[in-house]
Length: 235
Figure 1: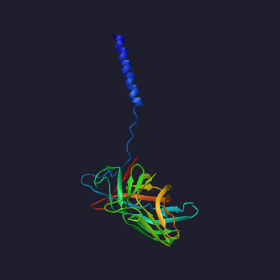
Figure 2: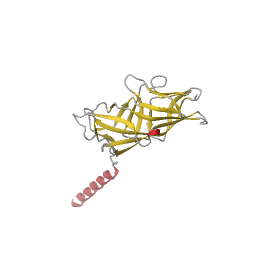
Figure 3: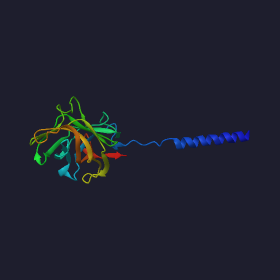
Figure 4: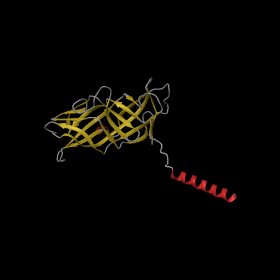
């Protein structure tokens, strides 16, 4: 009887050990965090130029099908002040947030000044490393409808809704405020979808665009009084 009990105990321990080693390790989900946020505190998230390479804040190369002709779209400044995250404006942790109607300024195509208009697009940043260009409200961020448009100098480039993966986030301290902020780096992204038309860029709709430089500074302010608060990305 004692031997039988010992065998049963050993079998139970062996089964427990197998279960422990076989179980996959749980991975914590990456999240954006505003530590001071709560039921009574609303925060506003802002996208600003990174302050490091302000003159090339947003740079995209586009090509003809054979890649024998290249045009570079560059904007000195891209920023926005309104936001939403997870359908609410309150809460300490969230997996994504949307910057509504980013404004592009100081834009050129191959060094020629162009006008830039955002007719209906937002940027949704996800904590897992993605930045989606999305429609918002009643707007349609689509080609020929309400996309982001760069126009002038014999070329019109439209960028509409799409997914951009490979965004790298870093939490740093803002030298001016002493608060934590997040930098988003999405340079090196390939296969950007766009539509180009005009005698200088008769490329049509294609997906060979490359984001050669794009960094954003993401910060948070307490909504009621506009005071900066910590904004953190936690992997």
